[in-house]
Image (tube, rainbow, N blue to C red; front, side):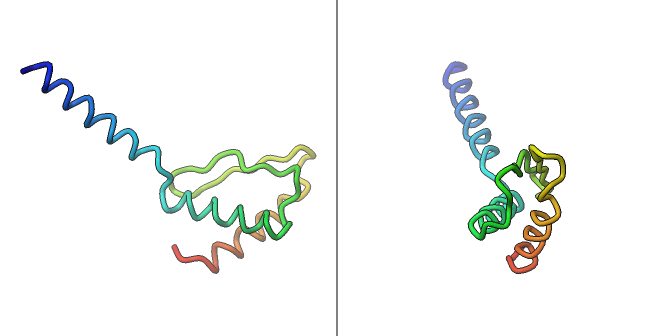
Length: 85
């Protein structure tokens, strides 16, 4: 009886854990904006998207200092303005 209860609780925890691995809508919005800017060629190759928080804050890094950061941020902001929240 206790083994069955333990198994049910374990499976429930695994299902909740899997749900937590899905990106939030805010993270998906950042990923979509990033992909659109890359597709348009507006993000230099040396700029990398390194982290996206669950609330949509994101971090970028560059191999050559801050070259390309302004263009990247401008494009991302344009995409955010035109995409639904």
